[in-house]
Amino acid sequence: MKELVLVVDVISAIALIGLILLQQGKGADIGAAFGSGASQTLFGSRGTANFLTRTTAVLATLFFICNLGLAWMYAQRTGPASVTQSVITEQQPAKKTETPSPAEAPAVPKTPEVPK
Image 1 (cartoon, rainbow, N blue to C red):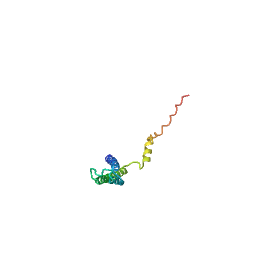
Image 2: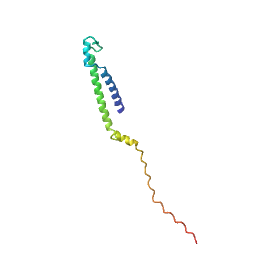
Image 3: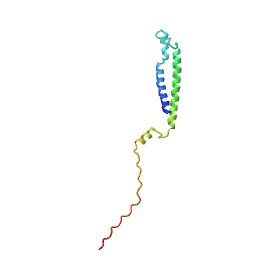
């Protein structure tokens, strides 16, 4: 589920960047008034601005919701609370299991006495 939301988030971010770059600034209308631009487009003179503005608003809302969802999903996972803690735990060598100490070794047997 996280991967799907992440893919939608990235696609909406790229589309949002593209739509913002396609839009004209408010000062671009004055050039069309003096005949230096084509004021009639596929969507009409103001239709393009409305279409791009609404599409941008929808994509921005989708992007915002995806980011909130991702933040909630990653907050629910268990594990280290921070990136630093996760790096530290990855770098620490695995702890060796201690071997239990054997029971007390039997006493060393006495050397046999040599007959005289």
